[in-house]
Length: 253
Ligand code: PEP
Image (cartoon, rainbow, N blue to C red; front, side):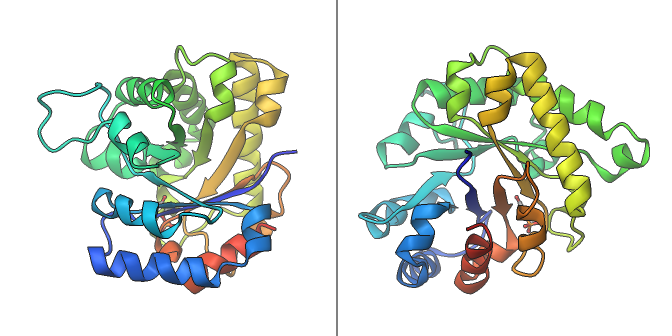
C-alpha cells in the first residue's frame, strides 16, 4: 500500500515573513488525522527552510528544498548542497523540475548526478518528469518520459528506490490552469511503472510513489487522486494558500 504524498512547491514566491505566516497557518489548520494519513511536504524557497524546521517541529509536516548542486561543496557561487539541506532538517528535494530544465538548461544527465547526490546525503528526491505540448502533439510523450526516467535514475540501485518519489508533470499543464485528465495522467503513471519494472523489477515498480503535478487544485484533486496509480500531487499555485493546499491534502485521504 503506497501512502499518498501531497507536496507544495512554492517556487520563487513568498518573503521570509509571508512564508512564516503560511507555514503557521498550515500547521494550525491541517488536522492531525489527515496529516497522519497523507504525507504532507512543503518546499519553500531556501531562505525560508530554517523557518520550516522551527515551525513544523513536532508535526507530521515534512519539508524540503527545490534544488541542490550535484557536488558536495566548494566554489559554486549561489548554489546549495544536499548536506546543507539535510543539516537543516529537510527530508525531500525537488529535482529536475521542468522550470529548471527550461530556464536553467538542466539535462537528464545533470539531474541524474543530483539524484545520486541527494540519495547519498539522505535526502529523498522528488524527481520530476514530463513532456512538452509539442512532444505530446507529436505522439512521443511516452518515449520522452521513459527516457527521462531511465536517464535520471542511472546507477540508482533498487534499494535506494525506496527513497525516490517520481512526479509526472506534463509541462503544458504547469501553471497554465490546463490539467491532464485523470485518464491521461493515469495512462502515463502506468507507463512510468512499466519503465520502473524494466529498469528494476515489479516490486520496485509497485511500491514507488508517483505523483501528478500540473494545475492540480481543490476542484480537480479528488478525480485525479482517485486513480489507482496516482499516489499524490506536486502542487504549485494552489500550495500558496493554506485553504486550497489543505483541501487537496484532504482529497488524498
Ligand atoms: C509545479 O510547479 O510543480 C506545479 C505543478 O505547478 P502548478 O500546480 O502551479 O501547475
